[in-house]
Image (cartoon, rainbow, N blue to C red; front, top):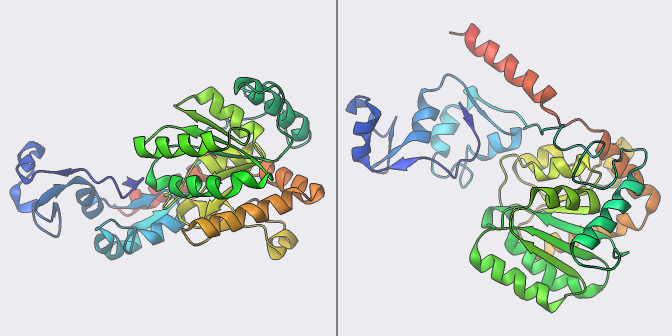
Length: 323
């Protein structure tokens, strides 16, 4: 059984047990029952031979509160059967070398020209006469609490007046969040572009045009946005949680020396920590040689399903051998 997100558990009225066709003897606190309700996620966790989830760090986080969302005890008891494997991305749909949603294909060899062409196209799409020369910081995703959108709203209010960067937000979600974004965007019309809705083509264009991609999630089982960003040479700025930790290495003197840095990471879930990380990223962006090296390294990394698929195959073979 593969767990994507412990927050979604399949909770039902206890009488719905009748619809499963299973014996009532299984409706007990050790197997299918959860605080008087039928819990289908718990059922899978208890009865599956092997458990996987979508990143090694998330596999550890869900074995304690709050990550386990009430089922941390079940997961801790099954820790020997639980494995975390990072998700892959569709490298056909998400490839700056062939992407039909961007005006000019590019690779790690000519990313500067490709990303500038995308900036021009994005400016036209958003109704601007020309692209803004300032670094472009983007957020693309669902406008919900899990994704850290409250931190983004706070960040925009704190930084949009600094003149150091331009911001673009693309997404749809909770009504109160959308209204908060409308207010802050209206306060800084020359610095913030807000597009409310789902637009896959525009999402590709923003990924290509941006310099920095914000992924400040409250929790994140794996995350794909930061993997798309790495492939497009847009350095991800993430919070240290779940799969974000497993895929983004903070830019520090040590990681630069070891050649592993590919983005920026902050720890505490608060606006000050996010803002500090953004300032660090902007300072790095001002050093062209440093930034270009980070972009090339990120674009050369392989986040396809090839490696992850081999891990799943190996695990399935082990599970079958133990049957």
